[in-house]
Length: 113
Length: 111
View 1 (cartoon, each protein chain N blue to C red):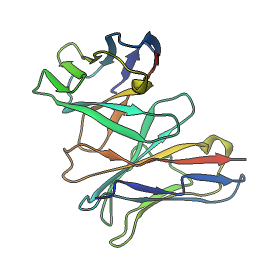
View 2 (cartoon, chains in turn orange, green; view 1 turned 135 degrees about the vertical axis):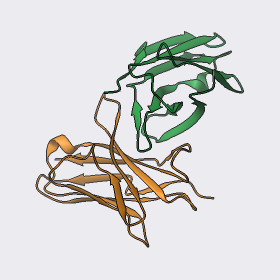
View 3 (cartoon, rainbow over the protein chains, first blue to last red; view 1 turned 30 degrees about the horizontal axis):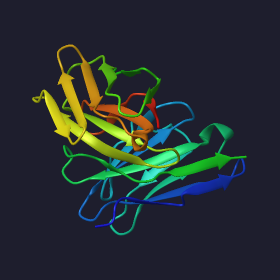
């Protein structure tokens, strides 16, 4: 059973471009969480999704950020018109029933030039 | 709002020493607490999960305790090894949706 997969592992974008981060949860997991880790800071919750539904996006910046988890395919975190402050490691986690342990992917490190 | 603090921020110990990492949280209404390990440039590996009704969990050389009423948890590592060098993160779950993380303790075990 493969773990949580994230790609790309590293992503470089220029200011104003779009960044698309993908997350494939573990097999059998229908709950996906996205976290952001800014340099020298702890992980901060962004959004929680189930298949085709956003359950909680209270940690998501109001503008430029969006997330989806379609019926088929990976979860996508999309950042439009990136700025330098978006440079961070973005981690995805998945779980089966919501009270269970969250399993984390290796992260995508986004660098905005 | 839940805040999680980890002390110390960094720790260096000689190989073989026993050590304790500390985690405190401000809102004691938690469902569980989890300790993770993060290696440089890598993802998070779950080490131990303690449910709110439990006092401690053990896995090999690791022992985690939870005192919910005082808002504290400790991670005890016995007979430390260089391979234990990593950043250790504490996270609490206060609702269904997300974990609140501390900023971590960066551990270096010197051979």
